[in-house]
Image (tube, rainbow, N blue to C red):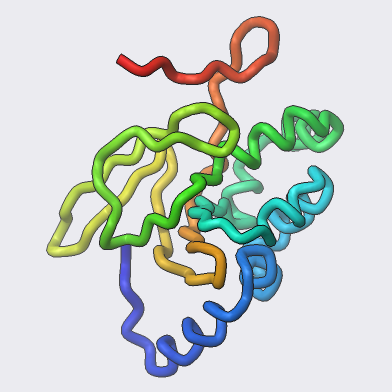
Length: 167
């Protein structure tokens, strides 16, 4: 996870921390596809709730990697769309400094695999097959981490999400 050295970043982060997850995402053009899908799935009120939440937020570039046919199918299946989006949410606040290699239970009921490593003195975080490209976008009810790939929960043959078993 990279830290920005730009002047004014602290002021921007302070102002964002007074906004909830949805408002912060709406104010960042990189998340316009995510915001429209959250609205379509009826998850706005959920993500405006008290939290705390950690949202691994795919950027517009991440959504562009999904073939159009698959994205259209997802958009036309509200239950599946909701499940995929909730797979990006953890019901606790996990900042970059708190992140460690671990399974993380999602709001969809499945487990994400979080892996951390140090590269060149910088902490790198992977969530399933996605790389965190910007960490710690603070909100009043949690934190957003921008990711480069849309996370897809593993589905069983019946099309239902499988939840990971505790071992």
